[in-house]
Length: 459
Image (cartoon, rainbow, N blue to C red; front, side, top):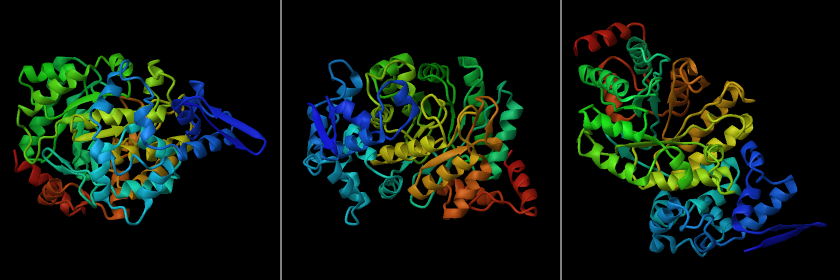
């Protein structure tokens, strides 16, 4: 359906909903690379004004990708709860924004309408919101998941401890892990990106982390971030798999480029749950996403990258994950050019994920050839902390020496916890205190001998 508007002497026309969504998106390099972005600020403002008047029901009536051509579109429509959506479907995108920001709308109100939300609706409302709007709305959303720790409780912030090593050296991995534990990191997951991605290496690293966990009685979950089929093979060989990881995206073609079918995700979830390794819950999936991945795989169907990112969240939601995070600046400046674009995208991703009911984390990061630096990451980290982000990354020195990108450090996690008085997961905090660390992972010089003695006594 064509939509148009006249601003001053200029007339703007948008032939279909996906064009309108793309033109309404805040500027980012990936959409320009795809030839989808607004050609001027005036055109973008016009698209946002038109989009604000679009009824949410139109996203059901006018799918951006036909469900006959794309299994993610089919999943979105099949899982849509019309009863839950009845409260909001008569609203326009602009009215939905006002409802989210109303003081009368509570987190419980948002929880009730989630099953009736399409990701396209969520993406659309984010496009007409300022950063402060998205922070305020996301702050209302509480999403709690659990395995060996309970993640996402109010006034908590978890950290994925990321001890990557360029040669998968066990001593190097353990040194980084111990460093992170001393700073109170690791309550989300201790997750390794393997430099050599094959079944024997994955099993060796899984066993390494599991031995550390069991030896020192650490309430944590571990994960080696390998392909879902490799995790399934590792489980079949008896490996101690806690979480099954997979990168996912918002179109069938993109997931196919990752070598992923939806049946694999379902089978791996059931396989991991059958191991019964969780102690306080059984959320066993871990997904990563990122704006621009669909374009890089030529699998974007002429849809803007932020809308496709939100569609990935609908797929993630299907499998009740323990963790989801966007690697917001990792794909590079071709898709998010500078610090300003990365900051906006990080807040969008967190808002959209939380609104859809996901335990949303953000890898606050950038590549070395992007027009960004750690000051930009400090800004994004602080905004995300205010917005109630579920977890962030903890990388030694903020410099991942295996993946060659810049993220957040163990010190950064301490900063945001101290600033906003946030705590680790309760099970993990209890363990920290048992080995002489406080709730932010800080140890006085006098406490450090106790920390090492407590660890050694658990051998």
